Image (cartoon, rainbow, N blue to C red; front, side):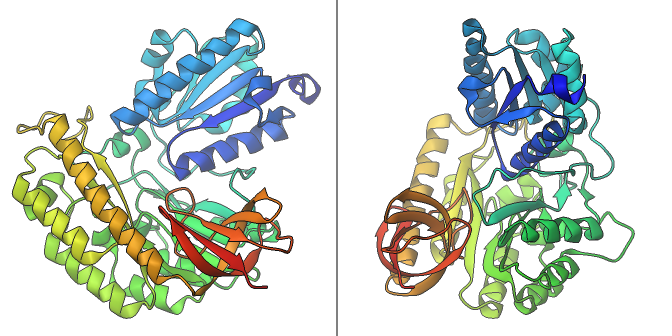
Length: 448
């Protein structure tokens, strides 16, 4: 179809799951805009909708399937003509998903989403399409992006796929082996983003600490953040998804030396009891975690730590849970996400014996989150009456704004609510004195 023909279609996106999926959505939007399609943020006015799905765990699959069903009901009004599923659920189930869900007109895997313009062209000509292939061998998730993040902040996906083979995780079979994006490409995209107003780059991947281990050149995460720090106009570099077994002294030194890398690290530990860590195939033991945390806190002033833990892995005893609970209490992570184990097809843990009852998983998860809420609250209390640079993301009312300080990552942590008598601008920094806390959020007043 020609660009003129394409322009009669309004395409809406629903992006589920993680930030890595969000980047893929941004690439699809960029591809479709280049092809002449109109993109709408109002789902009710779209006549083509693409759902970029997550399929990592059971809850994510249920959310994706329910979203497909609910969105498919829009066809009854006649406004929605075509519905397409992309992302992890599409990659994982492919033809089965298309056969089982009559609402769908197309299923697009992770190797094919960069062809989304051609796929839509086939769909609107009456073809019910399943475009799912094996995960690619090189980094292909790139192209002209249309950012969907708040002004001033953007994700930079530096790796895709994973080589870690954690026993519970289906990501390697869905997303494939580790593949890093060449450093030159990342630096070029980062510079382009900064020219368009990006002040914060959030580095993401399945395991960012392994960046460039698959490339022939001698690059690594240390050299990447060193070079990113030289970009004029960039203020914050935030590191997410660092596997604890792959954080070495060189990386710690680079974090300390790189002036724009925030003292904020997201390090998913998953557990702290050695029997569980071994069963999970996590490549480290509890004492490694303690040493790493101590080393990081000694090296990096004002360090903020975020982690993720899993409750109810098969064979997790009360003693194992108590060890995890004690580790979280002692370490005092600033932020923590927790989820309960679900058996995933194709993983080593799928049919392990000694499965934990759902009610026990939930009890342990609730206990960890109750503990973490008190820790986060105490951490935020210690920040009161101090001044922080806050990146403004939205305006809530004439004198009320929302933003984030360095200790808050986008989407997963709390936010900073800012009161100001002066007009503040989205995507810009303002100095804020923190006055109060509300659940996981902090409230402050601008002082400029």
